[in-house]
Image (cartoon, rainbow, N blue to C red; front, side, top):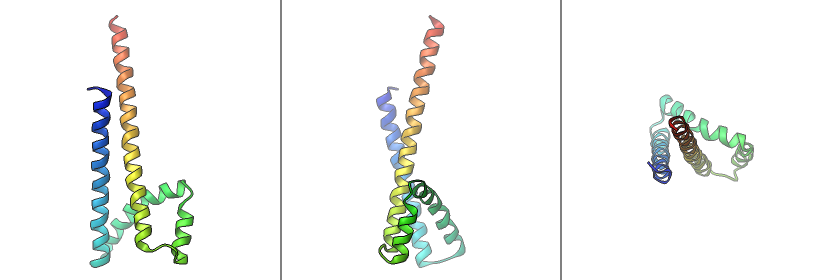
Length: 117
């Protein structure tokens, strides 16, 4: 498989994973708002943990929290920020892993070729 084909497959996998995460988030949010239960709330907190950590590492969580508590951001805007952050992180992580895989594969192939020579 060529590196280009590998990256195309990696991008499609990243899009699929991001879409799945987003779909689960939408379902959990609908359950949390329309049929609240302790389980739906726990899953919602678990899904929010990833983007919250990413935003915290980027130094953006505190300004978002302050804007939300001051009333400058609505709950849906905060959810949108968290969703975009999670999808972006999953996508970037998938591409990073694909790049590492291509580099390791290239390195192994070169070593095997050098060993035969």
